[in-house]
Image 1 (cartoon, rainbow, N blue to C red):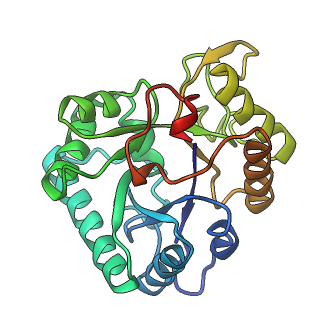
Image 2: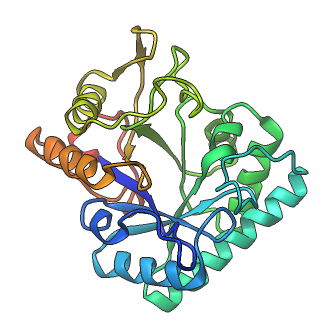
Image 3: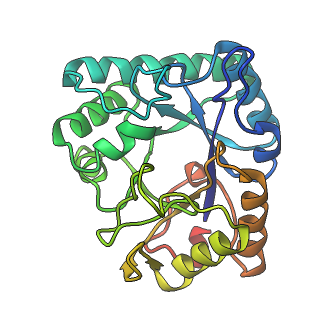
Amino acid sequence: MDLNSDVGESFGRWELGDDASMLALVTSANVACGFHAGDPTTLRRTCALAAERGVAVGAQVGYRDLAGFGRRFIDVAPEELTDDVVYQIGALDGICRAAGTRVKYVKPHGALYNTIVHHEAQAAAVVAAVRAYDPKLPVLGLPGSVFLAAAEAAGLRTVREFFVDRGYTPEATLVPRSRPGALLHDPQEVTARVLRMVTDGKVTAVDGTDVHVEADSACVHGDSPGAVAMAEAVRAGLEAAGVTLRPFAEGPVAEGPFAEESG
């Protein structure tokens, strides 16, 4: 199992999250690319620390929306979105080269992530960008999304993601942040949820029903209150359960989320 978090989201004198502590706990780092968050100094420092600690760096691409932190839908033309995503991957990959590493995968951020669960044109645009930049890069996304289906059809390696600190709808999508139950904060609760997902392939939705969820990577949001404590609890819980933690970008994930050889 892979454990990932969003990092590199500080901008100038505005600081968000404890990247140094998170990078001591996770195996993959979704690093902002400057469109929704992050400045060059923050990104280079983050990538260098990830390289030092053996954490895989992924390009977290998003809408061009610094003011809204990339959490507002933008009705951008697919061709323009493709160019924006290529630009972001290339920019972060350049930062990575200077920091002694490379971009190992791509994960959409915020509103773009949620939009391409269903939006076919924008999903195809992101897929086209990854293929144009490097078709060997895996993509990380929500199981059952249009995005992962399009990526798989295009020959990209797809990796399914589970959010330990986000509420799920009965349709196995994320509860919008504006609605009750969207965010979870208790370290023990989120640890129990991820362990149940690993062992049973299920998560309790906000309406109390169980939904089927399979994933190869678990995400703890770096900007959530108590994010470090949650990541510590989740990592400790997974290790105590005998789950090996490693970056999914090191190689193919075995079939099924519970296979021992897949971590």
